[in-house]
Amino acid sequence: MQLKKASVLVVDDDTDVLTAVRLLLRPHVRDIAVEKNPDALPALLRQQGFDLVLLDMNFKSALNTGNEGLYWLRKIKELKPEVAVIMITAYGDIDLAIRSLKEGAADFVVKPWHNDKLLTVLADAVGKKSKGGTASVADTTTADDFFGAELLGTSEAMQDIFLKIRKVAPTDANILILGENGTGKELVAKAIHHYSLRASKPFVKVDVGALTESLFESELFGHKKGAFTDAREDRAGRFEAANGGTIFLDEIGNISLHQQAKLLSVLQNRQVIRLGTNEPVNIDVRLLCATNVPLAELANESRFRKDLIYRINTVEITIPPLRKRGNDIILLARHFATVYADKYMKPVPELSKPALEKLMTYHYPGNVRELQYAIERAVIMADSSVLQADDILFSPIEAAPAEEKLAEESNLEELERTTINRVLQKHGGNLTRASKELGITRTALYRRLSKYGL
Image (cartoon, rainbow, N blue to C red):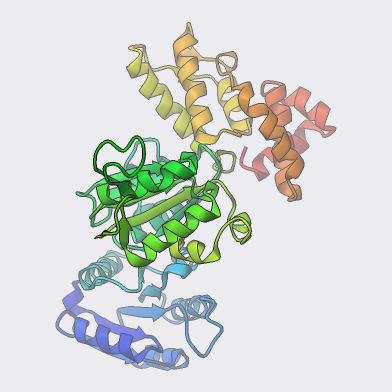
């Protein structure tokens, strides 16, 4: 079915939204109906055969949690399972919107949207409906679509990340990327830029956590000749260098309160003032930030300004640690084996079963970066075309932090999973010895391995 032949119902309690969508869709669809009150949905669905429903996730009469949108989505799918439903959401509800896909929604759009993008989403949904298909995280986005081959994953957690990238990239929303060291925060930032409307413009990365107080302003905002002892010429800062494009501020959680105040002023005014001058320079940049500091710690105002958090955190993307990504570990290991075999002009090695068990039972305090270095070393040092468990060595540098992290675990299931990982790694994947040390039978250990996806 083509969009031109579709009958569309729009349900939103914002009159302005209803008016705007009706005017936009009228030339592109067979007929369109609008409704402010979601309680009228069942009657409308029974009276008229709609092909597509555009449904808001929040209604002012409810608690604005997004749950009312999910409730009405379920009701629509119960009454008319063949109707394609597209959710309307705000940036802050993207996690709930992703959940709506798993509950049967065809797609979602983020307010404010580009009209062309909305029409494309509607046409895609109608096309899938006519083919008898339904959308899912897996078939809307695949790992191979994204910039950087290392940004791979088939796990549900990574599919959620890919879907968020696909949704937020075309907007100018400021993004805060959270995650432990080595999880791939920079790769996510590059993917967002690569699929943004600014992709042809500069992508400028700054490790702001490494900048001293004296260098911070000069590096970010620039300086005039003679502004300080070593300022031998005029120099544009990183914000000016990124003009029209994207600036990525890594380790944002490590900057001082004084630096935060300077940064906040620039973001609010959209202007920088070079050191040694009073002349403001207008800037047009898309801001991406990353930190390994948990959001709960950033919320402590003695450490981080709340007004800056709100400024940089229109949308939040949290990258899962590698130990929670299941079979992605094997996918990445094989990818790195291919990359480094090519680099060092060696045959691409196979991974033996003991090697795979060792990879799957290690706890990866250094995340993807640690796996990458372990596979690179194994490819270099191995004498055989098959990597054995003994060929894969993990860096002792990560061991001490891992033990500290283990002591801090508060979730009992996570503590059990981490303990099993640690014991299995200690015994090189030998299940008999591991079960003996853990004080459980092999059968019980198998059940736990299955439970935690190990």
